[in-house]
Image (cartoon, rainbow, N blue to C red; front, top):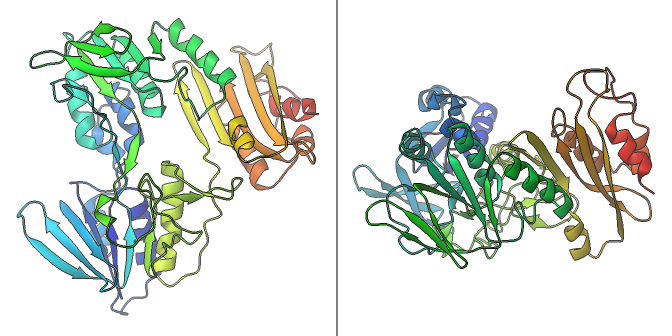
Length: 447
């Protein structure tokens, strides 16, 4: 049996490793990975922190080398691009990017794990020097090399999502004046509720970030290197720009394959990671995931889901029958000195789904007042109006705020109610919480 995986970063290598472990020795099965880039098992989530010089060795972002994968029995071919998939013949057209050679390859089971590309908006003069994106290792190396120059003093970040906010922190750490331009009225629009993002805005402003909301970038000015960014409302001088306006699944090569995709190009899969075509699977930033609460296939380009669904696909390609339980979209981010996290539904999600819901928002403390470094802790819960089953949650604060979202995620998966949360037996010690944890308080306040 010939297993071929297109893409060797997170989902692809998780699948390859799992499949290779399960395949019996001597059964003449093979696991082959074609990766378009030069490295595999790369953790792109570390890029903003590498750029900000939180650490200096880029290789620490690589979880597994090509040599390690090959030693385990996986055949890895980097700088190889799959051009097309013929599902009826179970063949691929593959191009060796080093030699230009194009060849055909037969498969028995195929996995699409090609990830996503940074969206490149149609801004005028986008090809000027010192305009960067941040998705691949090379992006990080080039951006850091430029940002470490003392001559570059003013940085503009376009996009107020996860990468944009993390780049803001990185550039502030390097001593830059940082400007953040967001097209909508708030950062993390569609990811956090408004009350949480308002406090994020306050935190960014407190740290000297020039926050520009409700403005759309039109073009860049300059001769060779960028000198200005022009929006629909103004013009700003800048030395360097980072574009962080989102991702698009890297699936254009599948347009004639018959594989079903969302309008944005994300491959639609079920709980086994299967597509609509037999023996073709997908996972990672190029694919959907089943949402536990929404009961829909959604696009959530997160490393956690990519690795977990990739592992499921690997088991199934090796003959198993594993199921991925689904995703809650759990995510966290550091906004300067604050931690923020979310899981499950937002209020706007509950409204769109036509659910009868209630919400509660509390302000409490992360620990006892007599132990140093007590801080405010904010928790929001979304829950069913009838039986009080928890549907979603958000947290914001300092020490311990982000990781508390894991409790809410577990509560949603276990179909627990706010009453259950209110009486849950959490650990207690003065450095970590109060005897009634803030999560208990949130559950007990919910009516």
